[in-house]
Image (tube, rainbow, N blue to C red; front, side, top):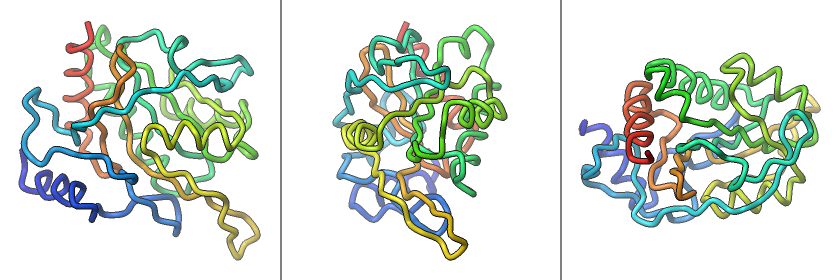
Length: 217
């Protein structure tokens, strides 16, 4: 494990994690007191591994086609990656989504097909199904976009340790939405034991995605 990664994990453990977010509204990647190991993960993961896993709630949202999507029963693949963001995010969201897409291309096709990516909008008033579909197709047409009421989205986010704030008006008349920028990795038991912060290396994510698939056969 690199010196940089060790330092990042140590900062997270003591609550001094570097901030990341969309636009000028900066939010921590890992808010809410998640306990992150500061030593190398025995399973060889390069992301931030959690000593207290997050359990995915059996909440039902709506996909880009207008169909109900249950976070537990509709996730059919061994590994599910979840990111909360919004299509008007000017910086972090498109960077993270591009990094995830790039990491997946580094996997063998047989491995890549066992990973499902969910993008849950934090801006449901603007992120309609067609808007999200067009946005996600820029990265990978297989990515699933989900929406719902803002309270329901916030409830899900809170359960998995992601901060989602309300709208912050901009001088231009628009607004931005503050949110945590971590990617969460869930196995077939619907538990997340690893997350990747917004500055995670593409190679590290690719390595970990493959390890997660291997561990969830």
